[in-house]
View 1 (spheres, protein in one colour):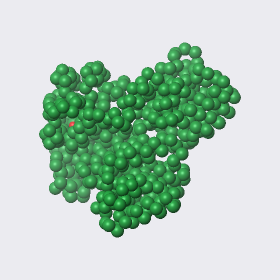
View 2: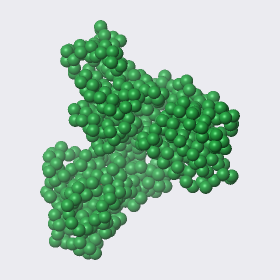
View 3: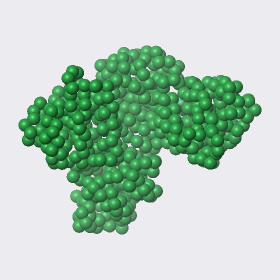
View 4: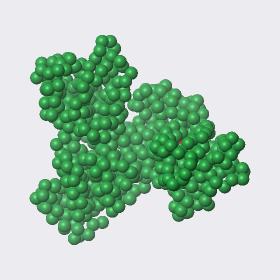
Length: 631
Ligand code: GYE
């Protein structure tokens, strides 16, 4: 709670802000006389510029959400595309005593240190572009590579196979990660069509006029163009003007953003200037919602929230507009419908300590929220999981939740759920399907990042070690999300130094027994030539420890042991010196899952991915954590 003096000062800042070009927003300004005491939290919003309509929109969404909270006050800054200015803005905001910073970065590399500094003192939400490392509270953004690849798929659809087709790509700002990602996704998607060529790629800095000017020049030589993909709708509009100027017709234009305002992408699709666009949600509204939760110290705040992008074409523009109109957010079932929400949960099995904790968390969170839960355990078998999902469809549950044992093979049953109008939430493991609208949200970890974290520790720990480092990898269930990500992330990091060698990568299934047996085999084959065991989960690591001891070697000393999950049993082994490093992967997903279920039923759109916040443990930190571990 802010003191009276601070609150009085806040009013002063309002005036000061106007004088120096900042501006503030919130309930105090409007209700100064009656309600100034209610201001509980001050939030700073630092923008890199406000020339892009998309950023103006972001601020609008922030304001709209702030209006719902009488106790919030926000100060906005605009750095006019200057990173040094943005760092100054943040310092100024800190000087005003903000309780939380929302920042959308100009140059992520240059601004990471100021974000890190700020995060030492207050929570920080990063919007749109990531910083390196983990020194922030929450990142909210969209998947730009996915947007690029969706645009590429759409382009392929629009340019029928046959004679050579030419595309011009109009990119945003040179060097910006958003631009590289959108472009990479677009190029990847087109790679399998030899008849399509990206004839030219130009930069237009996200600006309509620059796009028009650059394209005007280019069209002098490239008049034969079939399709233009612009990284935002403003540049797409500029492109259409250049085409008109050259009297070129029949060119398909695809944009990105889909903002609903004059000359925003939605309107441009409606009036036929654009053939299609892909929404790029700003995350402004979500940032305030999470800011409130963070400031109120609620549990289960995620680390990353990835928002879903929607395709808008002439066919769905109107219904999209209706669906997303602010006044249209209404509960997904009748107000008179008082029965509890009913969800069907097809758990993968009972393979690990992690899994048991996950089951417990989901069941108890459902109970706490008064949500009826139909629970089935598929014993690590895909056929059984499919069977249970079909059963839930037949029983017409409100939402289906499942933890897919492997990534592939779900298209058919998910299509059945979609046709029945039942949304599917993926808990802790992802699927790979042709159409991502077949699932509504994923709540779980970033497995590739977990693998990277495991490897980063190793590389640091053995930085001075001479000679080669032989690693045995114990893999989780074949083709499962965590197995694939943990393998990939680990390999990416160790590949940077030739001394690390995976001498054996053995296929387990996340169970203690598989870890023990595989390690037994590995020891028979490689003897004491093994320096490190990297297990994809704790249970396999604990099994491996038994095998190592059985072979007369000392786990944690003769052979370093690294694993992922951080269950109590593993932390005990770590504290006892039998393991060396454990990356956390939290199974306590029940509360976040139930929150998503309730949000969905209340009519909100769920983020595409909610990535949990997790830490890492060494032998020292494990000792401290043991007392608090719930699983
Ligand atoms: O790490 C492992 C388990 O899907 C994240 O599955 C989960 C993994 C977890 O059995 O122990």
